[in-house]
Amino acid sequence: NAGVTQTPKFQVLKTGQSMTLQCAQDMNHEYMSWYRQDPGMGLRLIHYSVGAGITDQGEVPNGYNVSRSTTEDFPLRLLSAAPSQTSVYFCATSGDRGPFLFFGEGSRLTVL
Amino acid sequence: KQEVTQIPAALSVPEGENLVLNCSFTDSAIYNLQWFRQDPGKGLTSLLLIQSSQREQTSGRLNASLDKSSGRSTLYIAASQPGDSATYLCAVRGIQGAQKLVFGQGTRLTINP
Image 1 (cartoon, each protein chain N blue to C red):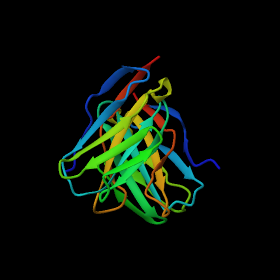
Image 2 (cartoon, each protein chain N blue to C red):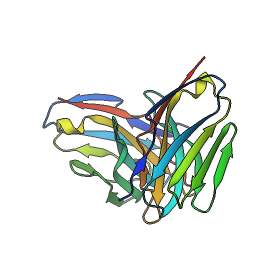
Image 3 (cartoon, rainbow over the protein chains, first blue to last red):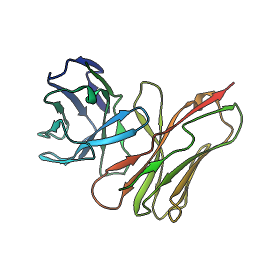
């Protein structure tokens, strides 16, 4: 039982490149979300989804796209990376059996 | 807009001490408050969750309290151990919408043997 799996763990991009951060969960959780963590700023919500086919914006959605075609997967797409998107990204999920969030181990992204 | 603040940013204490971590929030209309632990290079692990109708929650050596009217929560750690060294974050969920948590910046705790 893997829980929440994020790939890749580390990535270096050049400004303007695109990429997708993957998040997969095997707990059949309906709720999935993406946060970014920056020094001194805590975690901030980027996008979230309450089920397959349903997504919504969080606090800092600009520059990021998401989709949710299956319950298991919630990829985060950076269309044109900028240095301001250098951060650690966390995927978190929650099921209907309780309010606790389960986090992946994070993806560290550097944009040069 | 909800804002969550944790003071101090870092705390270092000798092993065995009891300690208190603080969390304050600006909007008392919350659904619940959670305390998380984050080890270096790792994700977050939920420690305790307090519903808005509750005053405190306990798990082992950890006790979290909530005073919604004053916008404060504390995490009490009894008989601290070196293994408690980590960053502790609090997060509040508003009463509307899905699980959109607002996080504090965290307190980095070091327990010295």
